[in-house]
Length: 336
Image (cartoon, rainbow, N blue to C red; front, side, top):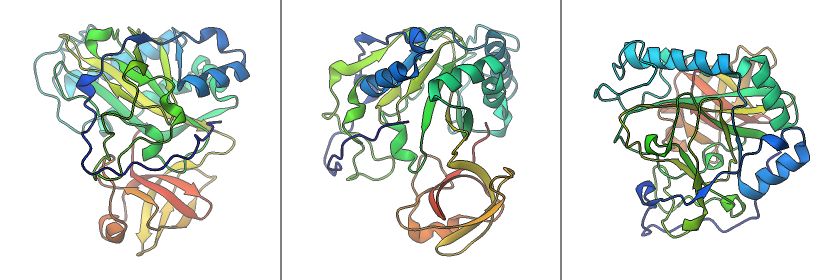
């Protein structure tokens, strides 16, 4: 279970300078946690103290190979980013269309990997119970010298999801020059750093995170990085000649899932009716209020509550986070 941090005053600084990912220079390396897999209490203690778990070569190699081949096929066939059959992921020089991380062409890749029996066993040990997927996944085919992700905390954008763990999975070798993930170690105890004084993605100010806390490693296929929802993290720049081929998703308690995929049936000014293929959910009507985190058109942009009924349309596929009879989050649908 993710322990909530102490309550800290929210950051509201309209004039603050934003933290630039390119200014981060990780000096630390992640500790390998494989030896903790069979001791869940020790695993959780490390996770809560440091804000991550890093495992070497724990995922089923066949599952990783299958996912890699599927993503490289998409890279070649859909986007022309690599030559067909090139497992080294050497970049062709073609631009990668922005906002492509959740396109239907990727559908099923992460779900198949997570569903492999060996991977289910690993994830059960990490969660301490049977896992199920949160229906949110971003597939990354990042070319050299492209834009980098801003520093962020997953929990800030995912209110209402309980007992879940974000996963970052490399599918090709990802040494430092390819631009792996970096985490501010131990900074998960200080609440959210996102600046409410600025709109959009609520960027984090450049003076609130210890610059000596950043860590990374050279990643290999089969590795698994688990990120604490309160840990600041970002993707590092790719300065190589190859694609960064990774995906990130989340797993939650199968016993008590709070997140599901559903299709919108109808909306009012303060409610939404949806139908899920999950037989445990079926058709539900949930209330929507100003504190509901609404991002039904763009997963990175929060919608105004006043515009909810106008922008949320019947037939939309959404990821829904439910708290009782209330929608805590409504997010543009993802395709695990």
